[in-house]
Length: 124
Image (tube, rainbow, N blue to C red; front, side, top):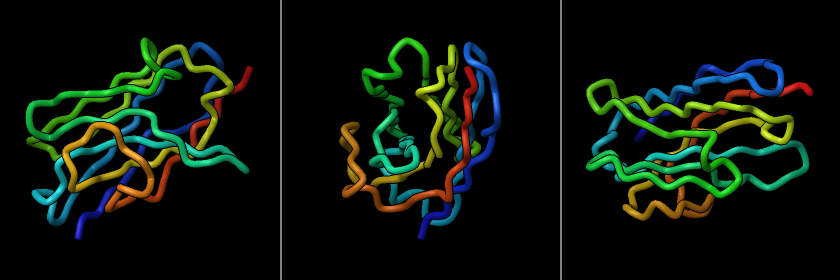
């Protein structure tokens, strides 16, 4: 079992920055890849970014490339999502995710563990 706890969300204005954190605990050795998804009301849960624990290879969705950066601190079992130049369209609940697979192309169906989510609201 893996437990994921997100933090760092909040209400900001367009152009501001936020850094989300995801603290992992439990059997973290079973998870090869960590990622972030987001879901707005009435919308699907969409992929944002992914990173491998070993090696640190990353992949970011086209919608956030150049603005968001995923990173990790293996010693702290923590994954981060640095979000810059935030836009109203980024408003959503952001979920941390863990997968036992190594692929950086993550889909909700391949996620093994989810965090409870943290709300990010960007006003215009």
